[in-house]
Image (cartoon, rainbow, N blue to C red; front, side, top):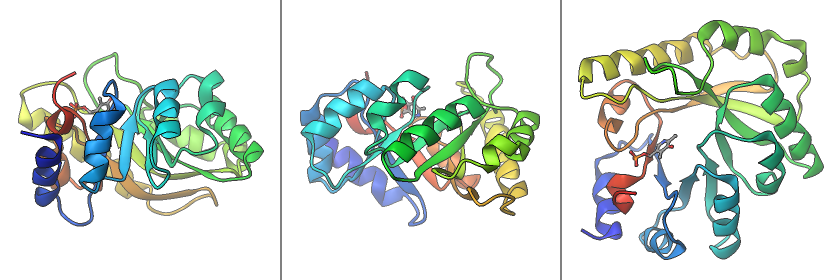
Length: 219
Ligand SMILES: *Cc1c(COP(=O)(O)O)cnc(C)c1O
């Protein structure tokens, strides 16, 4: 099936409140353009340099989401245009994003990445680290970032029960932090679910799914 068909088929199954991020990492601009021409306007990339090259080449009404692990020294390249940064998991990174956002005279929206999977390798904060970060004075004084939600990845497993438990856990943290405690925090977006598990994620309350291979094919 074509990229267009894949995209339209997936979109047809998504509830209206769920945003589709088309994850186009490693794919050529010609593939992204096929999705664009089928109406897609939100793209996710996991490398800042690759995303910036694509941003330069593609139409300017696209929302670019950074979904990968971020190196501080590269934040400046995406600061002028990035719409949402999904994987923020340290105060240091927030400070750098804030600094670069300030230079560009804008507020950059971010999601906090939580560690919900069993695997050691995935990035993200645990609940205690989340509380510490949200309560820190440094965080409260960052005026050019806004945390608009949470992001997490479930364990890569066939075990649906386990995946569900992990997504439910993230949803419960999301629900627990609905009361804004600072001016730069308001959790409305819950980014969870990829090609293999997005239906479960939606059942568990996801409002944003990041889908790559089911749209663009394997990498
Ligand atoms: C690559 C990636 C995805 C998309 O994965 P697929 O299985 O291809 O849908 C989603 N989220 C993150 C963080 C990724 O790195």
